Image 1 (cartoon, rainbow, N blue to C red):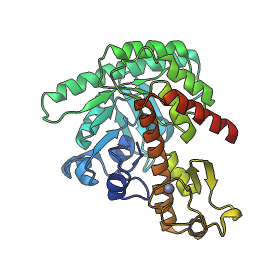
Image 2: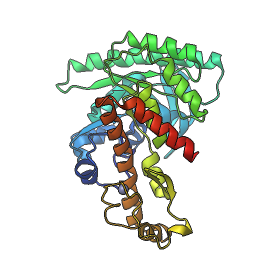
Image 3: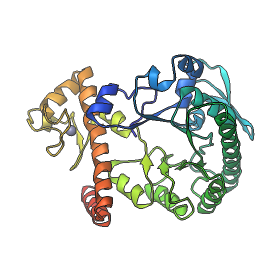
Length: 345
Ligand SMILES: [Zn+2]
């Protein structure tokens, strides 16, 4: 899923995403859109799909991650979390119920339950207390949606989130408790918070056999291009990451042969596209030399072209993975990915 934090993927139009890149599911951030422009305004404008003119599915996170990473001065208890807006310092409360209400006002197709994303590292004791709170919040959120479903005609999926920091026993206890909710899908949260990558993989593996096989599993906020197949190998179906769009803006382009830092002098008169194997709009028309020039000049077109390529690269990887699974060659595909990333790194 490309990330559209503010109901926009920076640098791309909805037409680029839908028609050119074939995106069918976008992520938008509850915390940001709740604070600005506000869920009631979005409801009044006909919901998020109409407001941002997006014809396909939208997943919204619960806002939990941003409350814990962006906002100041907060209090947290079993009822929810009190936080200060990073925009104007005003106090707000998120509860498991209110975040469902906000995401229903958006008209999201997939809602996430409020969760506490702990910092890394954290003590086992705190992680345990926090995980129990997240499970309690998931129960309350599911009850809230069941209640609302009686009043609304649209259908919405709600995913609870497995937490438990980097402790295998807590992750398993959390997944087992969430499984009882019989949810539409399950997310694995609390990853990419500064832990070493083998540990993130271990935490995904920890609950692999516990989460229902027939429901989608969503690893939140991951990963690097070479890691996508690793997550899939551990049972993950869905991922979101700001890396393709954020790194594009910073001058880091992902190619089938590794990373390319566009500002390097060696690309000054390089007529080749970013990636000779890529069929995206950017690679079929523009040279590295031109993109480097746009980047160094701070031109808006650089962001547009670079983001288009990086998002396409991620979608191509996922498409290769799907093909490999369908043709029964995924183990071989995974071996190739590992060999290439060992060579590179
Ligand atoms: Zn390209």
